[in-house]
Amino acid sequence: MAEHRNTLSREIERIREELQQYFFHSSTACPYGLPFKAAYNQAFFDTMPDFIMAAYLAAGYRRNGNIIYNMHCAECDACVPIRIEPVEFKPSRNQKRAWNKNRDITVETAPFSCSNENLALLEKFLAARFPGRDSSPQDYYTGFFLNHITSTVEFRYRVGTELIGVAIVDLSTTWLNVVFFYFDPAAEKRSPGTYNILYLIDFCRQKKINFIYLGYWIENVKAMGYKSKFKPHYIYRENSWKSVTR
Image 1 (tube, rainbow, N blue to C red):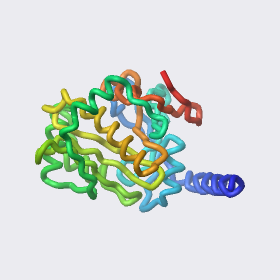
Image 2 (image 1 turned 60 degrees about the vertical axis):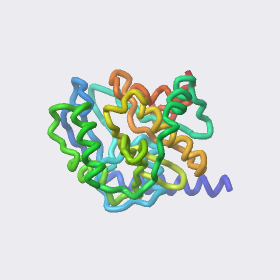
Image 3 (image 1 turned 90 degrees about the vertical axis):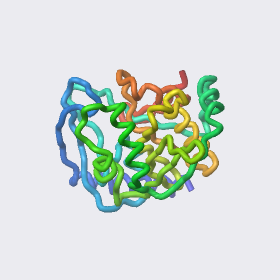
């Protein structure tokens, strides 16, 4: 069994090395507002088997539409991939409180949908979180969420019939990749970002999914700070995942 796993790992690495010829660099202003030029190492794909997507996620890559990328910024290394192993996770006292105060929420797992209801909620979220940005809700759905690489689903959070949050996730039998989460700003006191991750951890435990990829953690970006509060977690530095327990 161990020999088979080693053979498979070598084959996956060989495929990744072959695919590297399709990657190219692209520079733009930092999307997180840091005073540095952002440099993306990226490639376009039409489709991608789950085991190859797993290899890219495990190597710190992210997905944006049909693009697989990681950051190669010359002046900055603030973007740190972060993941959780659901079987290890232990909620803090504050996280338990966030879970308990949202017991009235019902959750639907549904196919990816650019519905009017979703667009209206995303518009509220973007107006509150990113005022003045040019990107519309439709831009997010067609340019960021929509893809042909992997299976993407939604977790829809409701209080009664009212939609208060949507998580866009890529999903396989062994990993879950959080692409984006948006919520009604009026529900902020519920700690919806925290509740979303707690729910996804519980979902992955039930489904025996090994890893949850939370995207990038950036220490000096307040909106991303909550990700590091889920412990233990792992951050990707120097080509390996390092455990953080405190």
